[in-house]
Every structure is written in structure tokens, then in C-alpha cells.
Image 1: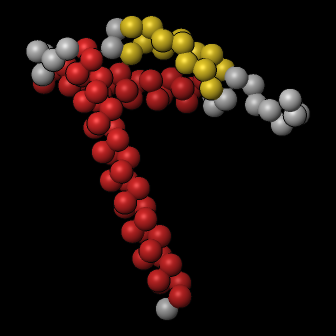
Image 2 (image 1 turned 90 degrees about the vertical axis):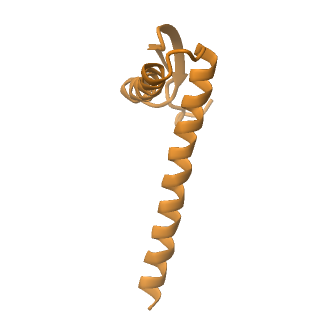
Image 3 (image 1 turned 135 degrees about the horizontal axis):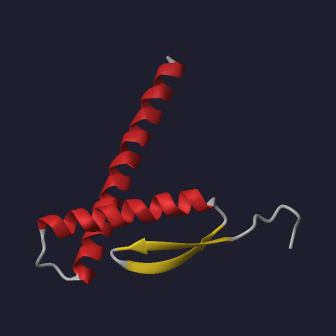
Length: 89
């Protein structure tokens, strides 16, 4: 293992009422933020669709988060294209 290896953090988080242990090389605070974001997405779905199973809520939350990611990536790509054409012109 090289000297540049980052330590692995193991963090206990609660998502949709269940405890999970998440490991990663990012900060403990970042892991908690990500888990809280996912938990809130599932919670919001549960408020609006109380008849959904836990599995369906998790899948819908994953789809919603992925949609957000794709939209932001598209906006970013459009920004880079606009920025690139502005710097060339």
C-alpha cells in the first residue's frame, strides 16, 4: 500500500429507519450528508405515497436522485459548451 492511501472511514447512518454502516475514503461528514439526503428523499416519498413498500420507495428515490444527477450533468455540459465557445470567439 502506498503512502498516499487515504484512511477508510466507517460511519453508522440511518436511512429510512434502518442502520447502515458506510465505508469510504471521504470524510465522515460527507458520508453523513449523502445518507441524510437519501433518507430525506425516501421520507418525502413516504409522505406523499404512504401505500408504497420500502423497496418501491427506495427505487423511486434512486430514480429521482439519478434524474437530478442527469439534469445537472446536462446543464454542466451545456455550460461548458457555452463557455468553450465564448472563449474561442
